[in-house]
Length: 143
Image 1 (cartoon, helix red, strand yellow):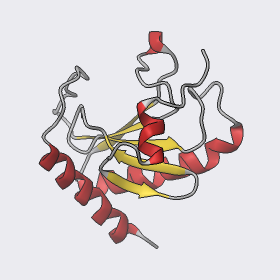
Image 2 (tube, one colour; image 1 turned 90 degrees about the vertical axis):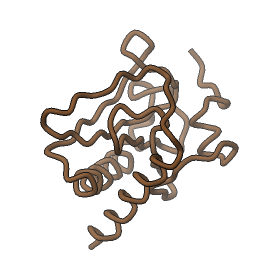
Image 3 (spheres, one colour; image 1 turned 90 degrees about the horizontal axis):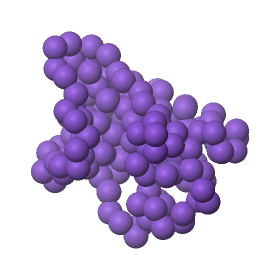
């Protein structure tokens, strides 16, 4: 499979499609998942093109996972979570639906199950509210 420069995450990175942005630097972009499995479900994507973890330039990993750690801590704080689930899928058989490398961050609270990722979009006001919670946590946790 060749990388598709018109996949939805490429369009978001280019600014062709809006997102509820949480964090951005020269290497990565983080934004809210519009079909969250739990409140606070967000994504971190590298700006460089790759289909998944297995074909990515290894130079992508340090800034990507540094951002995942930084945002994961903010998500845990923002949602007073008991834990964080980090997910990354490679290939359709593994559950990947957008073929641009991305990492899911989900705050987990004991006893609250994940909703299915069934294509149901969340209310935009809830997505904005959750994005604000995470951005505020990033500010509070800044060194």
